[in-house]
Length: 73
Length: 91
Length: 476
Image 1: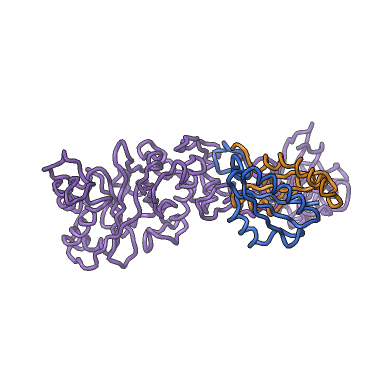
Image 2: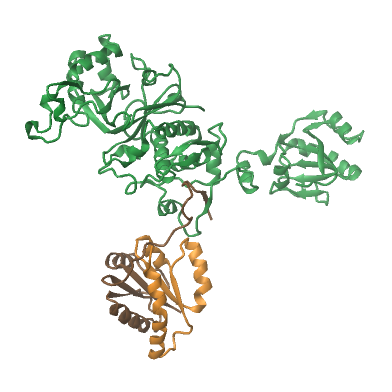
């Protein structure tokens, strides 16, 4: 999330993707950084997923990802 | 944690705001930053396909290790080349 | 803060008087149920249930303990009376214990309470809510660097600022006798009211000392007047901003610079006070570059330009006296100006020659093609001034002789003349025009002892549609 914080400081809209168990940790990190970093969570686990399952995960995450880096201001 | 007093007229919210977002990705360059944990590349492949279909150009990057923030050079490179960034996938 | 009924004492180990009266405290604990609050060591005067730990100074602060030992009598939850220090007769009659303190000296003064110690007290006031500070608190995140956080929030002028912690702001507020919640003025362009506290916050950020605060207040008052027209000054594309001149004994008290490098860098008062004003205009007034501030190119003085007049070295009356104040009054005058332009004359010995030399430069103030519409400030350096002083010229004579020379044949500067489209409108054809409106030329004496250079600061539009110089007294 430091990367996202850094890119945001440089004016680059950025979003971070992590699996569900990261939610609380991400919240704590965001508070420590002082920025409500854009973040999208996907279902855990990841490492043993098949290609088809990864494709589904990506498709389901897409809308949230787009919402995180585009939008009205 | 340091507390300071607000020097402004206090009409805007406290705290850092996210940077402005574009209205759409069409015509923009989107960086996909792989943190190099397993299967993250597959996830990003699909995201790349979807975003390209929306009219954006995608550039792929990867971090040397997921355990540390990206090196300064890489961040600089990404910042100068991209209009938006998606970093994935922490597991 | 509720104290127990009966007798209560507040002490600290690090106090010879408190140490001396330990037998007295023990006797009162036994005979009168005395409860003792200890400010620095919960084992002093004894390890016992009649000694209470007040090392966080909560009880001491809330009961306004200024001296240790303090002995209080509490009845029905309220303090009835208190005595401080040690005096045998006083303690005996206060407690009704006739043989108290046998063998001890008759009296001994107490020591300072930790809760009023200047290094400790501001922190207590903040912690216990008595700080009286009303501004919104902004918590910086744990991983945020304090200095970067100021930049990130857009609170700076491009240079780093001092983070305005509560302690720093409280210390800054000691520089004025005004209440923190006093409203001082309304700040353009957004026309927000500003309190003394909010001024203090920005003064901390600018790097001011507390004793500078009254000058910041006066300078801000000056630019927020309708006459100065800060809104107009911000919106113009012309490269102008407020320039401040300080007069009066305060120049010495606050160690302003009126000498070498007077218009440059290196002096804290000169640099930080006008900077505070500029920070207020952007942070409170909303007047930041790119937004309301439309200046095409700006000038370095917009970070803040303030200097003191060298009154003592001048044979003439001061700038503030010209502006109607009595001699010896502390004041700030705000004048809307460009950056300084050098007057170069290394040769003139006679006052007549130097006058003409200065006049030739003054005719170019803002533009040689324009007259009457804009004021200017002439800062005469000591060596240049010596030419006039040696010849016994008064300021009056200087002005009169200058006025005679600062006349322009309008036909030479009409639009289109010499192939230059800029210039005076055709309706002025055939006239002789004064370069400046009456009173438009500001004259100030400042600079280092050596150097045959003076400076001119061209003004902005003068009068109703523009800005006029405004003087404000400094009230400490």
